Image (cartoon, one colour):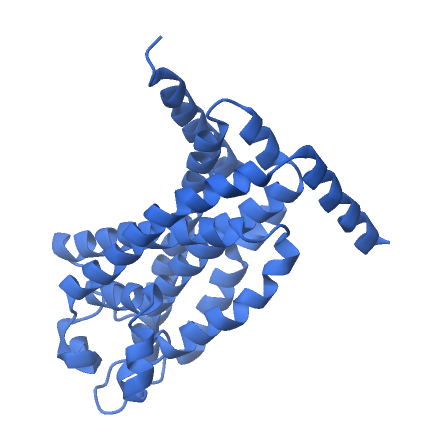
Amino acid sequence: MNRTEPVNAAVRAGVQRGWIELRQSLTNGMDLFSTFFWPVLTLAALYFMRDGSYEATGLGLGSLALPGVLGMLLAFTGLFGIAQYLALEREDGTLLRAKATPNGMVGYLIGKILTTSGQVVVQVAVILVFGAILVGGVELNSAGRWLTLLWVMALGLLATLPLGAIIGSAFESPRSMGFLSLPIMGLVAISGVFYPITALPGWVQGAAQVFPIYWLGLGMRSAMLPDDAVAVEIAGSWRHWETAAVLGAWTVAGLLIAPIVLRRMARRESGANLAARREKALQRAY
């Protein structure tokens, strides 16, 4: 037997599993609610911002915020989507069963990556379509702009999904992940999602540029906004090369670290550990 055949079979199984889980998430009432709850709230916020404008530029606040919101949503879902899957299915034993199957972790991770990526694409499409109708100002009117949108989304997923896997492997229970929302919201606040980052102090701008959320928002704005909107950006430039470099650096770091962390997590999984986690969960329930 070809040595690569078992791995190829695991990859095919992972792809099939990912499509099945994605279809289920888009046809189940509770999953649909969790998928579209934040997009709907975001659209509501953009609607109330539609009549505002940024200083003397005449650019609508809603138009400026829409691309940043899409970048934020992509980063959030990439980070927390797969992280929550890992934490939840580590607790219920799904991860242990995957570990016990030959090359099962390969198929499992491919399935989760496909499911999470599909959910991101659906959420982005909903906000992009309805947001453009509500606030206007979107100029996806050329092949170059669409190409920019696609490469920013693809590189953003590659930068955030491995980080999400690292985060998920660090927590034994999804309930212990709640405190992470505070630092993430802090990053959103300083990343120019709802208001141009150039209005913030210089040291805050520097801190924001270390992380993917700012660059995802910048890349989205470069694809979706009129050319004169670049005037409110740092250095008056869309900085495509810098966007690719920073997101690429996070991608490389994540792809190097995530396999190591996941292998260590899988080695620690056992029936005894699973039973102990279930006992703790029962104690909390009572």
